[in-house]
Image (cartoon, rainbow over all chains, first blue to last red; front, side, top):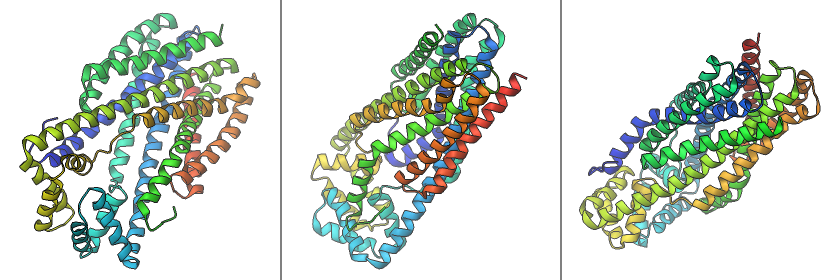
Length: 236
Length: 236
């Protein structure tokens, strides 16, 4: 991440432009992992690829709805929570201003600023009530104003990427009727995709990409191996 | 959420004590949704409960590993990221202190404080470099020091709760050999559990509990209905 004289502005811009890509990568790498592992597990237990395709697609649909709709409702909840906390702060600034000023001073005391500066800041902030409430929301409660549109878009992006990612490990099962043969191709294809997505995911989140790619690939491989082992044990 | 004179302290204590419960509820309600929907979907496609149990358990194992291990590695990554950003801030405070002071002033300008106070605060913070770096981390970059132990514990709690939650919808399939009969019991049992967990989840996150319970239950029902429909269509 390059650092400019206006670090904060730069970073915010960076995060905003990559949020969409980040959502795609997150949804896809999850989609690659769980349906892949489920298909691998079932390959150890059933003799027909069509059943694996059915189970895989049922899982993808269920997972995408749980992820997408769950994310959407979580975004709504966060917006509701922000609004109710904001109404409370507005009420408190009106009814108990001295207590609220003390809370402002507490925030700056925790930064290590001396008492005279704490008081000067509290008095200055109290001059503009909107500004004062904004400050309390962000720095006392640590709440940023949520963007409900962003949450909806993010939920949709993650859900659809989960579908796209989940279809990759199933492709070989569409074509090859024998699950054991399809499993080999599915492993090769999915682990390659997991590595590529792990690489981009790490790039997007500013981590060492190769190490991140290996981590993501190992999680997928471990999940698939465990699911395969358990399914085989259950059907022995 | 009750409000005390020291709101922040109260809220932090509140969040800390409920984080464990919150992890359990999150893992469980996810575990209840996806394996439930998968089992329901397969009930529309296969004639033997034992295959649904195998697929369900393979999904639970895969999902718990992806969620638990994924959460653990994400926690590690966050800690690495914090450390590398902190090293950069320490270096910048040493090498380009005037630019860093300007960044402090920018933070307080965005709060709506006048220029003289901005300068006084920046000069005061610059007296103690550790404090200055702490300030830059928290208020310029918006990064809180992550607790790696917390991340590990949280990942384990969520993963195990996913397993516990996922086993609930499968119980009827363990006992009843005919999937269509098991499906009815699984729906009744799971939707009841989703309602109860949705209720507690909303309580923990400070939302209206009944509305939250209905939302969580509807997501589960919708995911299961969609999975059932898709699996039936594929096997028609």
